[in-house]
Length: 368
Image 1 (tube, rainbow, N blue to C red):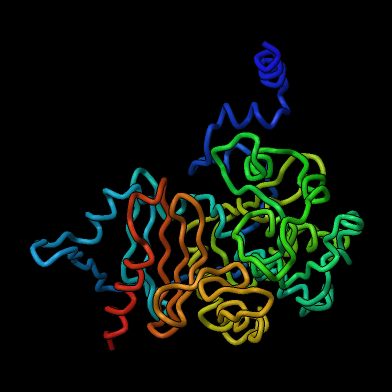
Image 2 (image 1 turned 60 degrees about the vertical axis):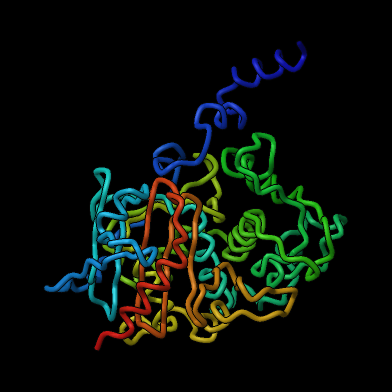
């Protein structure tokens, strides 16, 4: 009875995290409409990919006896809402489903982690942060006395911080649900505790990236993370559409840096192009080349693993990498094949997307 009364009381509170979990139930593709956000304005000098006069529509074969299915038809069955294939700045394949189109804004979910990593690189180049080997506690004095002194920014980028965090989104009392639906991210980060020694265990979790967000906020000294993104990346690389970054609360809110950028498929592709070109954008070095190289070439320092580096997933083929989010949001980059693939969806659709991207990129690499 006490538990029932507690639940009823909590549900009666508009600001209760559990209430929002019960009402929204699970992350979905419409979440950018549910949370407060900070705006990102389209660039005054938008960049446009060229559309090929001869678009492709590859045939997918999944077995020797399979007669094959055209990619456009296959995607229709996989909860996909947007799919782009871009090679050498030319759109070879562009299809939308379920009422979505080129102008549709879709949440990034954890693809935002890769954007957050880019901003850490910018902040180091700008002198706001000394280096990736700087202790996080330099920016988070509230961590003093919590046995987190040895955690460096590198550890956090590598997902080897050793910080305790439950990544489950289906547990209403877990950390991930609290970070996603809660309204005080700064408080949640301040109360983090260690689980293992830094650099000894790799464990992917969103708490690490939210820590990076608070480090950025503190380092920028008054400028919001969204404003910094606008200045350093969004405007310089010619984003075409207005976008946003969801925050935890309306007044003095903090960006959910572990997730929750909200943009169009073409603008996500431009972020892929920035990394494909080693941080250079049409002759201007927007991100330091050495930062991009560090971010997408795995190493084992600080407990790093070959499949992950600085908030990017390493793809199947050597040199390829992915910004990835829940429900099957992907920015895939293949430098060897000069290919960018963006897939946005309502769910992953029971597809091994990394394998599909790899296959498509390799087939395009044979083109002149």
